[in-house]
Image (cartoon, rainbow, N blue to C red):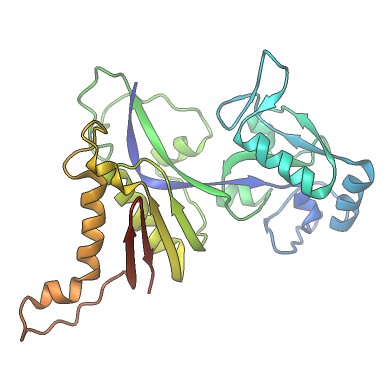
Length: 288
């Protein structure tokens, strides 16, 4: 099976409706720094105090969503990236974790009715979900992909080649909203972004310029790892690959001289990149 990248980035976050409440949620939707609202009463400090007093935080998760979360049939234990994140949260609170596995619809509906305290499940923030859930800032970004059969050579550009095609997608998910063109993701900004994703030029260019423009604060640092894959003959990237992409960033840094064109020429052009440092395996761009 092969995949084709969407031309948009999905912001995935974990929701905290108990720690939603712990961060200031109550029946009036009051908030102490978190976004959104949550159903379920009780003062925020009372809820956090209850978790600490009980020594347990109840976390909802998906038992069949690898590699983020899944129930290992051999060990009977939950495993995955989101499981590790939730476990670390509990560790820092000094409490144990009790796992719950409600349906996705129940989690995003917000009517938790004190059945679990927190959901760590790679959930995309949307305005609709934020009306009933409190969200932390995003803890990672990831592109979405279209998967096609390995023999399919007709789907090369998802912006055009999917027109008129039948697409399988889970209802009520970020991907469903994206295809219906109703997806809205509130913006987040960061001081530092590390891009260690596909190591392929086309996808890295999409993610770089999207995140650099829309989510990196002025003066922020963007680090691109493993750009040297463009030198590998067996990596399978087209053209110069990541090496060519890094060269395009050098061209962007030289925009003033490039558009001036001669010693006596003039140009008011200014690069979108304040500085670029390139070293083996790592390129670091700073935003003006």
